[in-house]
Length: 235
Image 1 (tube, rainbow, N blue to C red):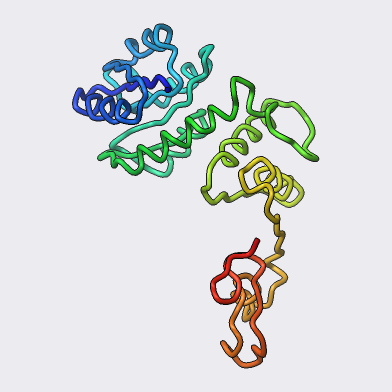
Image 2 (cartoon, helix red, strand yellow):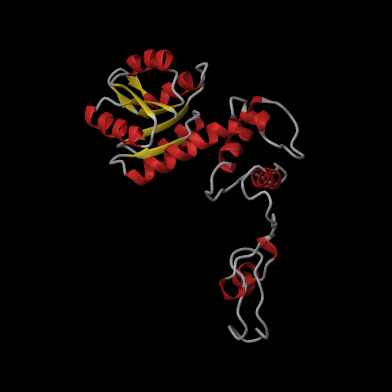
């Protein structure tokens, strides 16, 4: 069972989220103001905080750092009715686990809640960067540790991950790290240089094809990723 702090100035939102949290077998604590939330943070020591952006006495986005720096370092899920890609990016940059928009749906809240708690359990009270099997990634700078923490969050989920960066920044190393720290670590890690694939054969090479699908397809072939012939998944 986890302890969840719900921070929103709308009593109805607090009530709905509290009921949902309780239905999932967790304990819910409510705060209608940011100052009240900071007090509850100390008293309740929650594992996770649902945090509204626009509160009467402050900004939830600006409070993420203070909440994450608390001794218990709870995960933070931002909730707001004014969602935007810029706001989502800022929330994640500030240390939030996720960002869900109002009106809240059961599916989005449940998915985010379960993934955040699963990640927290995997940390098991340790620093995420230290708990990871880092492979060939070395260093201990704050920027690298932040990247490792994000990689750990990604590894704890089944969500697709896009890694961007300039040539030589270690994108492939981080992709491998995520794979090796995930529940898929026992499966193949396939590297594909998409830039070198002939445009007319990309689909066939990646996902495979059945015999006779196109001219020259004399036999069925499995793809590098995705299902092989007859829909059988690759191992």
